[in-house]
Amino acid sequence: MKIDFKTAMHRLMDAEDVLILTHANPDGDTLGGAFALALALRQRGKRARVLCADGVPERYAFLEIPPEDDFTERYIISVDVADRTLLGKAVEESYGDRVDLAIDHHGMLRLFARESYVEPDSASACEIVYLLLLSMNTRITKDIADRLYAGVSTDTGCFCYSNVTARTHRIAADLLDRGADVAGINVLMFETKKPGFLQLEQQVLQGMQLFENGRISLLTITRAMLEETGCRDEEIDPIVALSRQVEGVRIGITFKERPDGSWKVSVRTHEGVDAAQLCAQFGGGGHKRAAGCQFDGDKDAAAQRMLQAARLLLD
View 1 (tube, helix red, strand yellow):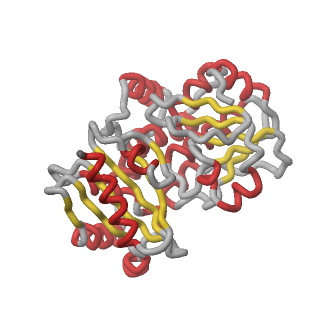
View 2 (cartoon, rainbow, N blue to C red):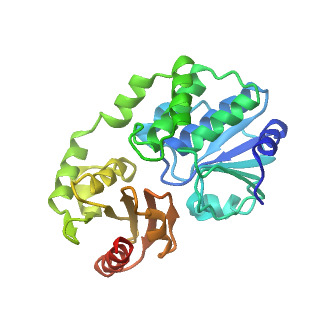
């Protein structure tokens, strides 16, 4: 069931021995929110730890916090997880039906936790965590501010996306006042690229296809490309944004091949085109400007299905 803000705050204040779950293939929002919440709970004398099915990618290593002595969880929270399947297979099997509280900002959240607090208008899950921590009279230290800012910055594309609100900027300003390393985090997240990534970016752009008079773009990232350039899966998310940066493109579609041969599809759109509506037709979801789904089997057949649905959406 869904709960209100005040109830969610009291659940956090009453929780003991907390396990915090992120989604698999993690980004700065799920990790930043989870580790910030863990630090805040520890500040209140509680035990808290974070679990991610895929571990913490190298580019987000600065968000990790020292582990605590092992303990048996008594309360389980998920942060930025819109569907239990996004927890990752191993974590879902162990905890998917045991989550007590889901904190999320996806309008298409598939309810799986005992209780869920959802703010679809929030640009990031970290915005919600920030507000909850303030209501709990948490002392937002530099360590907490860094993690919250990283999440806000990640999910807004460094404040370039249409999900940004005046509140988003006010929260970012307050985190800056509290010591967040805004410049350092932004350089690390948006201006630092490895040579292999640049090679991959070049290959992907060379293979870009345009449809519907340039209104739809299609990018493909194969396992062979990753192996040749030495890039890891968690490093390629910035390429997805390129799909809608070509002038005239309204819908950008990126197919990313997984190790098992299936395809993860990421969709990015501009104002007036609902990415979540497109992906929902194939069992996926997300936000209006950023969403995803997945396909098994032949990539070309899957791409044709996506393109046909995208054409209808534009029409």
